Image (cartoon, rainbow, N blue to C red):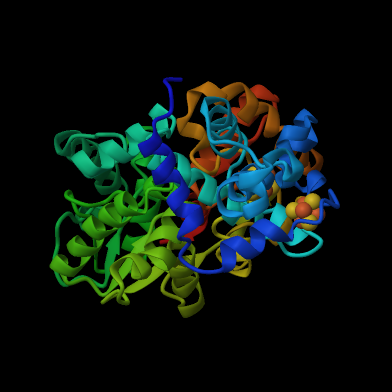
Length: 429
Ligand code: SF4
Ligand code: SF4
């Protein structure tokens, strides 16, 4: 790493010297070092080194606070373990906040006194972002989204090609009315995708299209703004996150759609539903629903009919952290899955105490941590194996991707599906 400049240090310290509210200072000073959070984190549980303990990660930020914002830390730093922000510290922060945390938040309810550990780690990411020290591959996702409108730089031509290919198959199976509508105005639903679907998992696009067809929904995709992801959230760059979210917002408003339906994506739901109104400083002009909520509306209202005997194999649910622990959709997920599958088994633990799959927080984008990511995913792999399930269903494409890799790495012999895919398999037309 090049020598850290004074400007970089000043930029980083702004997050400590001028925090948005008093929460940060409270949480930085609260840890009593009881160690109870250690076993809650998959990194510490699987890799065993002290540097992976959540409280250790919190203390990296706290030691900088003591060094630069307290009198004792400024005068006699060793007395209070106050650390300098130099190259060594910056490297440790990158490895800790980006390389060994998925921002899953599992440690937070396990803290004996309620320290918001994930929030403090997130502030650590923000400090690194202000210093221009975000891992390159992760930053590339943000740059691509800002430049091209999607994090994988998929050209409009390639996007349309994929949709036309899906169209052909849907029309063959269901007839002309099943075509995927593009750039329609005044629809009820404005649907969004994870670009990974366009590139690697197009069958989840056709599954949702089949459901829209069955529900006789008025819906559209936009060729200008369909990407539901927002890696600005993971880099800690709020300005970039707001810009990416605004692009989608403006397109929904332009198209005059009533409801923005967020494709199956954990952090995309968090950003576009919960964070975006804070970025814009006003509520959205449209309703925002996660895909699973819309599916439940269709099922409960009888707009679609399901025959769960079409899904006989044993299914288990992986709860995406940003949708369940941090998003409140645990019951919605179970409602949809139990309407579509006959045999369901839960992992232990599950729901709000579920372990992260290891792919959250932008981990999948940072190749330098691949080995560690797959090692940390061992807990999830063993959870899945213990259920004996043949299908893992999860409403998040990042989780789909990580569990697909765990499947190969740990030889789980499972199929991985989104909820839309499970529902489409059970649909009665
Ligand atoms: S947020 Fe998750 S990954 Fe990060 S320290 Fe806490 S438990 Fe570990
Ligand atoms: S459980 Fe909470 S108080 Fe105890 S060491 Fe962890 S962060 Fe600190």
